[in-house]
Amino acid sequence: MKAAVLFNPSPQWVKKFPNLARDIRDFNGFEKEIFPVNRSEPDSLETQLAKILGGSFDSIAIAGGDGSLNRTVNFLQGRRALERSTLAMIPFGT
Image (cartoon, rainbow, N blue to C red; front, top):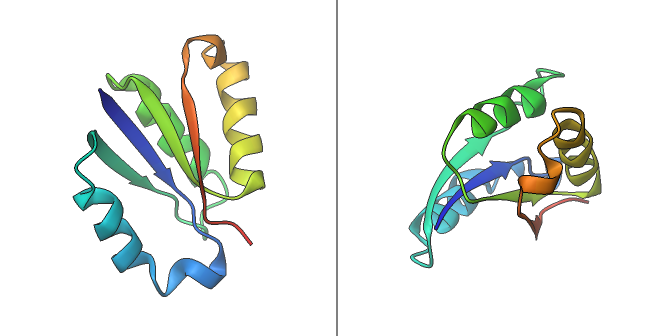
């Protein structure tokens, strides 16, 4: 199984981002690639999702909050990719 991890932590987690990203990367349960969201770029989440859809991933894990989940679902639905996507939530929102 290969998962894409969309990483969009809330501001309270940003200082801990290097440690969180390392912990996710080092978790041995599955093969993964991390796609960090740049909060200073308004469309960064959607840009990363487009990259994810262009890859060969079995699932998408969203490390963020309910806004990240909502935007992800809307993006996937708009690309008619929601029904073929397996989503997981890693709660890092506020």
